[in-house]
Length: 475
Ligand SMILES: Cc1ncc(COP(=O)(O)O)c(C=O)c1O
Image 1 (cartoon, protein in one colour):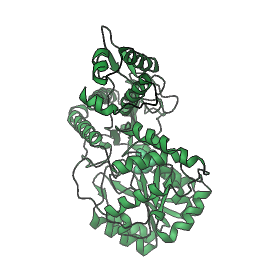
Image 2 (image 1 turned 135 degrees about the vertical axis):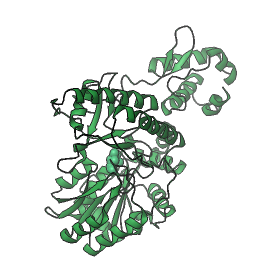
Image 3 (image 1 turned 120 degrees about the vertical axis):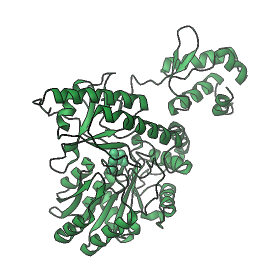
Image 4 (image 1 turned 180 degrees about the vertical axis):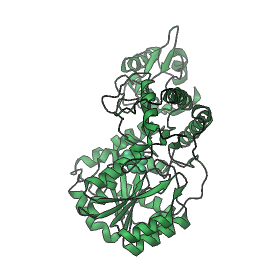
């Protein structure tokens, strides 16, 4: 009770007491500080603790029940809940049509989690600041200065001095990668891409007309000698790379390797576009390598708040070397003229409080990763994987190249997974599946249980077809 009273804070004398209480509780529930499923104090106890009238508390609870934030328990009392019925975007299979939205569906195709505690509160603070921006045009083409400054400061903390005006705030890392590749290349230009990789970024390069040149990322990382000879032979204009908890393998490139890669790219005059989306999802203590731009100055670093905070913010940024700034700014103008002000204000609040992952999110992810690692040996006998020190998924190698059949069998059991070929530049990688552990541990365990059944089904019918309809990889 004392914690709840503290979280609600002092009463706002300007609004009716029931409204203040209902708004405060709604924010705490939406934010996860009063987690869904948690019992609320009885009306009588809350009346006493807050020194309000019983009618006020009854009315506030009634408003929240009406809005779907409280459920009246059979017998007595109320339980916090979320009005998910109307807001299933990104929950289960509801993100795109045609893949089922049933309650029973478990979706392991998206390596992204829910918003951490504090997100709704940051939005509320941003809304309070909004009026002072309404008098202007609202086009912050490079980004809100205070947000640019916070992002620049984070690079400085990581050992890379950065001025705020080198930061371009964009609508997510994908939009950033896409902008960078378009600004730097002309149709037909050779561009280095990893395989496997995050497929949407590869698609962005493909759509810009680039000639894609693959370099392999193995579960244990990059073959730098092979990459150096590819670079020397093809002299790519740009190289799209994910060096920090690579999606999907989870590999992390160490400083000595970065140095070697930077030397090869420098010799060829290649600009690196390094996607650091997963950077802050560090689950184990690791020695952090320097940002790639500290090794190769002609590097555009791409950041995102999607994994450290929330994908729904749709905010990311580029750190651009000064000589390339005019080209990037010009390309950006043709793109979208700036990211939304409210989201930038919200991200400023969130980054000021904490640049990285919320400790609760980290603890939950570690527990879920462990649940997956515990359940996998009996579910997929003979499969192999390396437990990554960060990121949101395991890249699992099956004993046979049948991941597409496994995905089809899993779908029949209401489990969606992404088979390896979805991350390949052209084809292949059918021995791999990407298994995200972003759900609570008990959900992960349930999902791997279904995967075990699906794998049995695949082995019992070797002639099974590898269904063609796969859910696109979103994150
Ligand atoms: C490597 C990588 N880049 C980009 C994205 C998309 O990020 P954003 O939501 O910031 O556009 C993801 C999402 O999973 C990712 O893994």
